[in-house]
Image (tube, rainbow, N blue to C red; front, top):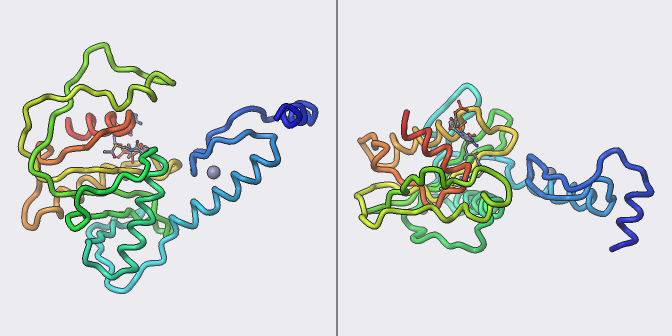
Length: 225
Ligand code: ACO
Ligand code: ZN
């Protein structure tokens, strides 16, 4: 280990230290040939997993100038369900969910945002629920950034009184370079209009489960507007 560190120093690289890839979110050491090679391998596998080939009879539930949203249901053909599962795995990996199984796969709806370049740049997993516990705001106690936020991000206080809800969003994810362009907003709007046939769900009827700091910022903003 020490000799490798030494090598990095001796090589006199311009870029040093730990880098988080904005696309595949792998942390690697710039200037370390071994790390960089590993990153390239992981990066390409990651992008490959997000490639969307498509299929006949895909269920397009919304279209936008920059892409479309495809809905996959549990009884769809195997290849469609498989694609949804593969993408969910990539998302879980990035969110740090390790082998969290869905509470009920038969009730799960997966929404994929597919860009015009045929790449999956957004994924939302929605499940039927009956009730939810509201996240309580903690004035002044919200860790803003850094390690503190990472360690405490699953520690929001929740109310003990269940409230009725219809749709639980168990995962929402947007490809790093495509964030803050309204893709998550488009996906949640689409869930609200298509999750239950014939009605548009209010923001009170949808619940975000176990949100990350990003997820909480998005949900707070979304539910206000
Ligand atoms: N910080 C502050 N405000 C934010 C953030 C953020 N990181 N993300 C969204 N918002 C707010 C903004 O007000 C934004 O509007 P603006 O850009 O005009 O200011 C508004 O929400 C709408 O944002 P979108 O562009 O629709 O959101 P985006 O497509 O970037 O996706 C998401 C948001 C899904 C949370 C994305 O940041 C992401 O994938 N993060 C990593 C994965 C993750 O943490 N997912 C949530 C897990 S929790 C769960 O799955 C239940
Ligand atoms: Zn990468």
